[in-house]
Length: 169
Image (cartoon, rainbow, N blue to C red; front, side, top):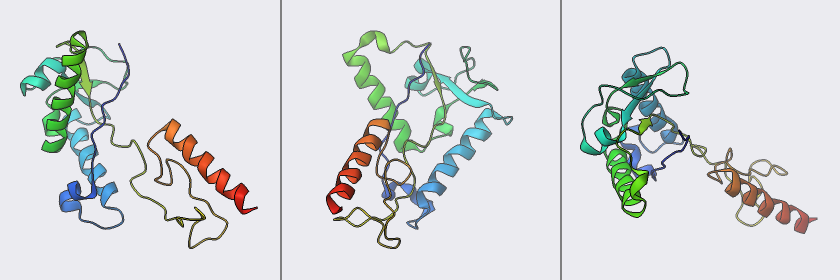
């Protein structure tokens, strides 16, 4: 068993009916999370699908045991994600399988949905000072501020802002 994730790039143009407002990314995530809740049947159960079924575009009728509590329900992840996400996941998995043939085990479980690799909003900051333009002395930094997508990039963003603060005196 492994706890790993697959990430698909999503741009504002992908938000569809969520529009282009400041919280459009949040609404996009909400739609996916609500679809996952429906597919899981309630009770915070997560929808899951065997890798072989996902790649063959057929619903799973069973799913392997998982450490996720309160549980996983077999189904079809295509009911959870927008079609462009499903297509990107399938293409990415097939590409990985071409490079690492043993990676794609047909009985492996895919469980949905994690929708937050980084903040769905970005706090503005001045390009030169890296300070908030509306709140002098506030430095929006890292993942929560929308400037990173994980631990390493958040640390690097923090280092960059710290160096800018030191240079300002």
